Length: 114
Image (cartoon, rainbow, N blue to C red; front, side, top):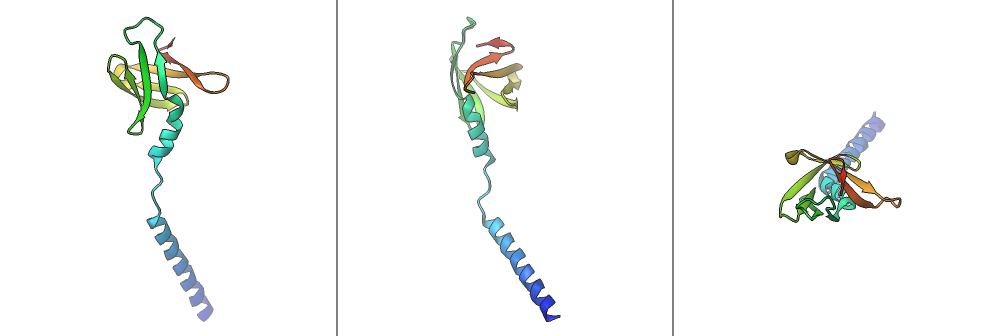
């Protein structure tokens, strides 16, 4: 009986210690993980289709992939999967094109490669 009580007391103590450790642990930052995965898409891309926008600079702002266009417009890109994104407000489909070394080198906007 005493052995069983000791075992239960030890288990209760361990359970409480685990709770304390996890409650005091720093929360995992999804934003940082998201920023790390989005950083492959950052950079400056030039338009070659003759549109008024001559370049788009892609940055991470507030944990979101954001395009700053040369006409001073800012667009937030939403990742669908992999290299596929959308800009819901503009009804734009965006696909990032990679070179053989897996570096993003081009952007396809609604099927037109920039």
